[in-house]
Image (cartoon, rainbow, N blue to C red; front, top):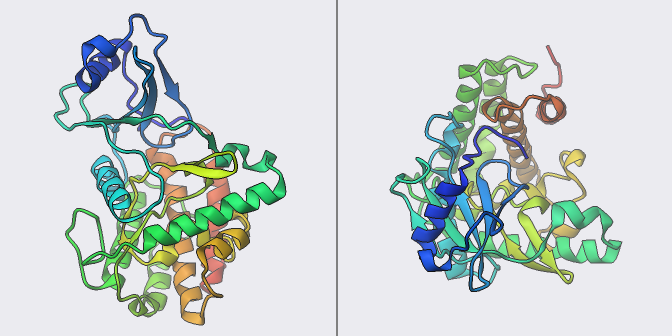
Length: 329
């Protein structure tokens, strides 16, 4: 996926990074030992093949001169913290971290290395899998997501803090950051920004039911799951994790917005009962948040086409309609 947030580097810089992480004696000559992995939307990642046969992934944060959305600042640190929490408190398969460099001496950005995990991207191969195999994979994703959500935090908000005891304050603040990002870049939503704020305020009381901070991935969709032989081999891309309400996870979006896919197998694997009335309201707010980001991020990513923008704006209209404001400008 193309995005101006991808901090691509020259072979010389990549060689220097690999040598710093694994030692110069393990980095082969030429350039055949490295290749870019193309499925990510935010950070650039490279596959490294070292002299001893070890394969690794090198992931580089966005370049310092590229503006990102407010919630994406410090995303690499968030991912590293999330990996530590998941590896330390769950059985969900995630890669270990081999090496971290936050000096910004190479490539002008933070970067880290982890083992390469051999597996197929579920978002790519899923449509071609036999229906029972795909259903089993999605159930496993639900079960893995539930296990991640079992990790408790001491406060709502970013993994590195600062935290807050009120999920209402944290979530409404998150949405306000997104709206401010959109206004700053003049992104057209198809409705007034203040109308979105009004809708959020009208339904914000539903958030008070959430009392216990849980680790949430938020971005655990099929494209961030690697599968092998019908089983989850690895869950990747954890840079959007925080402590919040598990219902904000992307796997719960389908019943509210069918365009995000059928959640039946995810819900079965997660073991979640039908949503209560209050949970449905919260989930609609989370759909609003998700679709706002998907519209606004197209400008921050520097998309040259309008496919995602057009699709996401339609979904934003549907989310607003679920909250009683279906009129478009």
